[in-house]
Image (cartoon, rainbow over all chains, first blue to last red):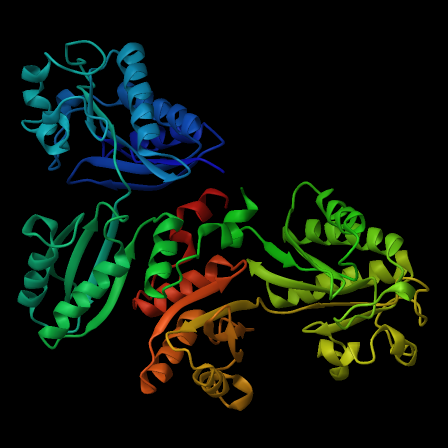
Length: 292
Length: 292
């Protein structure tokens, strides 16, 4: 079975296209991986992209990108709305197919060691790869940002106990695949979306692994969700729950949006559940079989 | 965009494993295609398998298999329950991704010409590749089978106007992807499955591209369907229709089975329709993007 891992590195440059492209192209030097979905934002002053492929190749590819970012970004001059602590800010590894979370944790450790030793940048491991409970949550590590990093320098997981003079520090880790899923309601009343979001969100005792907000965007009343663990709550289950709640308020679902990339497994699971097709599996998908 | 075509050649040998494997292995000689799902049946005295890959490679692969079948099968000694007219009985090309039906028709013509010229076997083109209306339907070409072939020898599309002394003739063509989809009802009454099958089948004015039968198999009451054009009626639509009809008779759906291989596009379509996710597309599936 093929092993595929995804990596979505975030870098602290969202304005200078030359720098952004140089980082992106460095990742592309490794021909056996796919590098795509380059996004950058001037206000955030930040860019990110997706690398997908076999685990060792993805590691090499993202290391090349980090090397370039280290050379070209100076954090002493960086300003942006998005929290950040380094030139390469955060690097999550995500299992896609044939790869366990444990393997992604080991990838994060391997990359962390390499970045610490070869680039002399302190590395903090986060989420599934975290070695300390206080580093599990990315927001906690980034609190105070680059400017407050000095006080954390007593405990990086790899690299020197001293901030890199231009590149700051890096957060590397492993996490589950995140699915961005929006449901548009057939109502002008944003309060209904907010109410539904409040009920389904995990924090309030709703669906496991679901973060949700009610919005009005482009004239659409939307329940906007991040599904951080599709094995617990997949998009089809979220859809049915929102439909049920909306129904109680006499509101219909107008449309939904699956945003960005998803692993084939999310589709398989949605179909198995929705159509009671217990035996259905990804080995039945022609396109997948061809490349096994 | 990658081009993928499927080919499912059927051969008149279902007993002699040596012959079956020799044919299968000939197809596998072409390393750039995937050859799988070998099935054979003693009573039918027939075997079939699936070749998937880029169009020219699939053509070469199936031609190798035909060459071997021509060498090893003697139709004068063949007996079996399934209708057949040749050692290689029927060879359909099926578009999977990035390939039009017209390209599959051209593949059928190319293969037909090659089989006719190089192996001296008369070739009839069928379904989408048919050059005569009376050859569109496979059952019509096969009527009377191998034994009645002589009277048809005034009009093959390629090859000699004379039956091959041991290999008979071949039917080659192009057709749409066929999805085998079964729905098990939560009732012991097979008449309900038969009634539903009768209503949804296209022939009776039901769903376009749907062939359906009501069965009792392994204690399960089943609506067994062949979806011969999933762009007209996909499995999710068939499911909802069966659910609606069963509901009227106070019967629930117990489970469903998607049988064999399916193209990714069927899953995409099912998800777009079921979850009103109009913009969702196969480019968002990580596994697909990796190999583009």
